[in-house]
Length: 426
Image 1 (cartoon, rainbow, N blue to C red):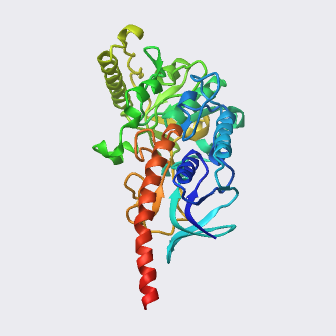
Image 2: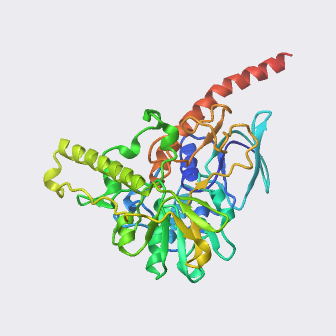
Image 3: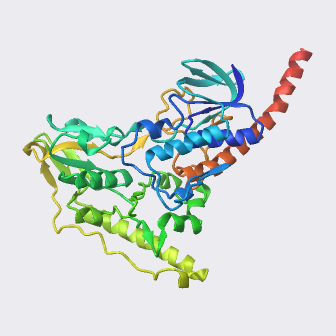
């Protein structure tokens, strides 16, 4: 089978790419190993809501049309939104088609699937960055008798063994799981590493409204001094709860969550060892939050908005006990389950083209894989702009990527015709 472009993945990024390819009259197919919005369906916990308000779910030619623009979608609602988008744009999706191998061919690329081979001039990889749990090596030292699971396997507190729970990681996922599990009545210990503290609401507006209005979410990747660092920053400590409550560390300690430092190791005696830098890590998160709020206040003042907004204010520093524990004996029975909320990594095991770095990530320049012309990637953090990993960022990234793809095809076509003429002359 032959087509001009193959898009791998039918989430928001792959579908946005499909919309733009159609607008540019580029024939293509979208291959999906499961169903449309497959990751949203299979790898999220039951109570999860989007971190972004409903109005921020904007895709090319499609947006939220309900009566609760400031609410936060549940997972079933999010899945229905993405499925509705696929139908509305008549995306040429082939579901239940797993990609086995992508390799260079004699004329472009060969995409081998479990349902046949596709040949294409270009390929857009839109499988995202959250395919495999990133479990730390220390997991191998967890004593027998303690259940462990990745955040992607967690569904609700009822699936956990009775007893205390240690959540490792305090970004968006870890903070939300600690909150939910603690509210179920269990004792929860949260191992805190680097995190980004922000309020849900500031001066009467959602923090995402501020980041959108000020242009922060549209900040381009090539304007960042250290883009590698920016692409690896932890996710915001936010939750899309209907009551809009915060899930920062102060909110968690207020309901009884025990804070410890980053999990540094587990020794031969089964004692968990925690970093002593908890206070410094939290102080840095507080500092960065207040810098963000300072920037927001300056923006509002410059535009004369202060009279229609609540007055500026600042939040209490993160409260850390005087001497956070550095050791916890896991053999004593207080912890029965460990949940690894330590992030994810992409899975490119099927990509047979030498474009991966030492950590298994695709080397790219704003989604353009320069080492392999005609190959593109989407759906990664800060791919082309700060909002790239959000639903709201997929459309702009897809516009840019498909524009480059169209230029590539335009440049390739004359070269192909020259080759044909030379062959005919021979």
